[in-house]
Amino acid sequence: MQVTVTGRNIELTTALKQYLIEKLQRAQNHFDHKLDCTALLSVAKNPSIAKSQKAEVTIKVNGNTIRGEEATENMYASIDLVADKIERQLRKYKTRHSNKGKASGLRERTDEPDDVSADLDDDVAVERSLALDDVKPRIVRSKRFSLKPMLAAEACKHMDLLGHDFFMFINAETNQVNTVYHRRDGNYGLIEPLT
Image 1 (cartoon, rainbow, N blue to C red):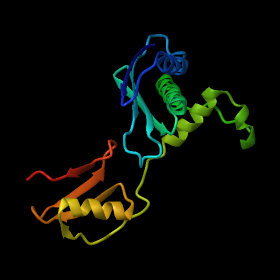
Image 2: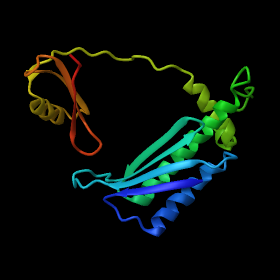
Image 3: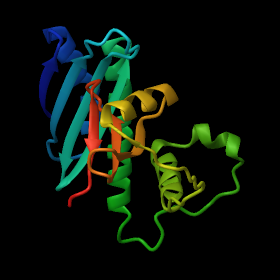
Image 4: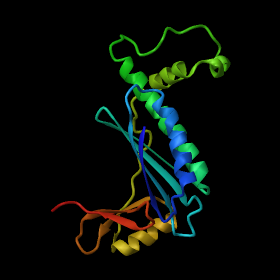
């Protein structure tokens, strides 16, 4: 596996890089060809962010992108979690694409009780999770509320007071519906329609 590691607000030690590469190497076992992987390890400077040490991994496989990101208080724990997530996604990807020619992506169901599922091998567990993925997401809740004219800075304050990740409002300057949101870097973003 070819791994490119970059760091943001963190000193990339040899031990840290080696630990990341060893953890990601397990995912390579599912493929015959070498995978090209990029990893970003970052530490948020904002002291109010509890889970400030984040590991992001992106792998390109046959024109598809597999991506995972995890943040904890410890960089090694973040690496463990993101490596597990990437390995699951790659296993799921490989199982999905190897089952394309079959009529059904699942093996025949046996009469095993559900509590035996811990004894199933990983491929069967992945195939079962793929069956759940086939269920299409649907709208389960609808919400209506009135939009108030305000400035973007005021909308950010309302969003923070509510504890939401985004907030819709009517921009008092343009008289159009806008949305403010929290960015991963700790700043705010503003979404405006094209006129």
